[in-house]
Image (tube, rainbow, N blue to C red; front, side, top):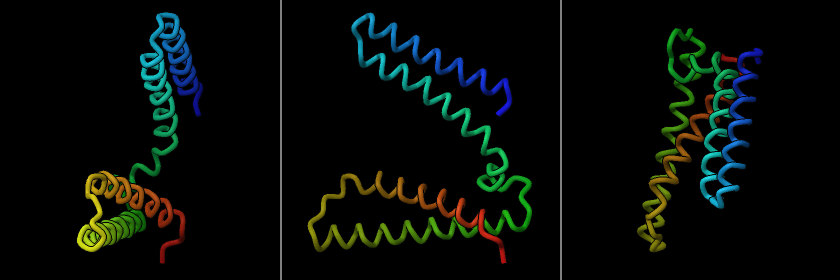
Length: 129
């Protein structure tokens, strides 16, 4: 990481500590957790994004070569297959097990996005045939 990026992450961490200390001195632990978490989250997001710039082409497809487009296609296919699998399991549980459908939408979204990210990583690191 470049010095400018390290300095930015360090300042975010210092701001998080300052917000936490200020909110706790005012007797507001909820504001301390939320404010500190926001600054720490921004620092983590910034450091992760800086490291993922080469991989960002895989997600967007922008200026991707043939191997990167194939990787993106395979990851999208895997995410689609996972979405179908979760949908079939959800319908089966709703019909036969009297399963409540309250968290299925959120759970499905998380599983599909996670499967896309994992498949993108998996297919991006294996040699293309």
